[in-house]
Image 1 (cartoon, helix red, strand yellow):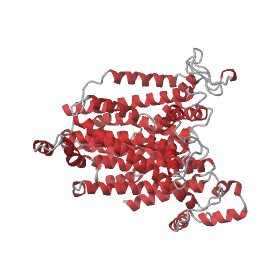
Image 2: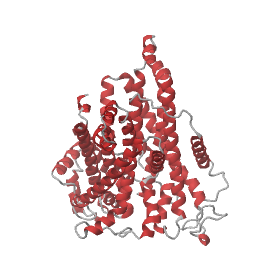
Image 3: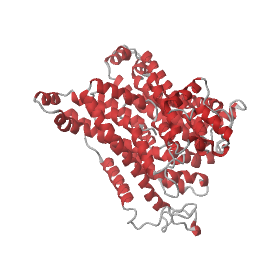
Length: 294
Length: 306
């Protein structure tokens, strides 16, 4: 339920050098998850081209209908097609998570690498500063800023969530880089007289990247959850634009008449999160095994 | 460090008002926009002074326990907050007791036979639960469990205060506590399980086994304490997060704690209340984190010696 757990585990496992004997193969489930995520992303990209019904078209002659051939997942209280609203709704989740993590990684990751490589005063000042922001949950800061910074828009949500994720990215990347910076091959490169940029680009980056990628996946899951929570508080995109969060929120008032309206978007969201968490988890143990073999 | 964080928080909370587009006074006052009110707000926030002076005016008021007076409900902000805090504390205590009571024994069972059938079921289950956000858990629990079972006091405005009827109060908190406990349980279970497995391979455990100490005693007296450092660290972060994550649970189930108050204040554009709650919650989270750091040092003195 809380993705902060994964973050802590990531930081911890990358600090301790224990490499537990885990399965080396990624497994069938891993690939099922990858395919599912790919389908979702493709659906979001090509939602306009796909033979879907208009997600905003209201047909009052069939409100609150159950699943049928014509409306795969049924219709909502305004007669809109739930299936097409879910496909279009995934756009908001995917846009917000990719956009904000672009900000988070774009700023947090280089700073984290630089701080871990340079150390000294730059590192200790920056780290103290970042940890101050880490100390309180991002959700409070996000809610606070979004409720004052009116009028709301998707771009503002992306900026606020992105800035809030910078300290988290910074911490993960810094810890990972620090472990690698002390390895023999980095020291060897230094002795050979390689420039700082070369060491960071050729020695550190390829080894930090796998940890970064598994954190990115878990980060996407956290941001999607956060966007869902914001939608519940009325701080995300405005209706009638569908998002998974605001579909589930809208379903609350008519739960008993039309349970499908709650069930399908919830399933879509949970499956998406489950796949992200699972892939992130698998990748992490996979890369650690290969790192141990080196 | 603690002072630094508090300063960052206060500056942040103070600056929120200035994110409002246009003249903050006009927006904050909303319908109560009379010249007298405007003068009062300007004096209270020092709005005609330079911005750094405004901060000091605001800080001075806060240190005197004055978070301002809402121009919408016309009650002091602190009175509103003070009324909501006990509800948050009660929710937190109940949910944490439930979470630890379930997580510790189950983690021990799993750690006894890692990759055994019980461990596999529990691990897969906990992984799935991690992917269910609290707001979905609530909607589905209300839909499938609470309505069918007729759990009393769930649904709109069904909260019963502790003072008036304590059984009714517990009943009305049952569903929110359960959801919060579930979220905490999953995290605690996973953290404790992996640490217990590592601890059980240590030599002092083999030693204890060879002395013939019972399995139960080894678990509770020998293995639990050294394994609980990460658990306590996680608990600190998690309980702090509950203050924030509990927002949605409170809002969805109409429990008038801080989260519910915050969200309705956002709805009414009652900016001074929003600012006050953000400040109180942020300081609360920091204090919880520092308390847990302190507890960890007592449980494992090796950490502070490093």
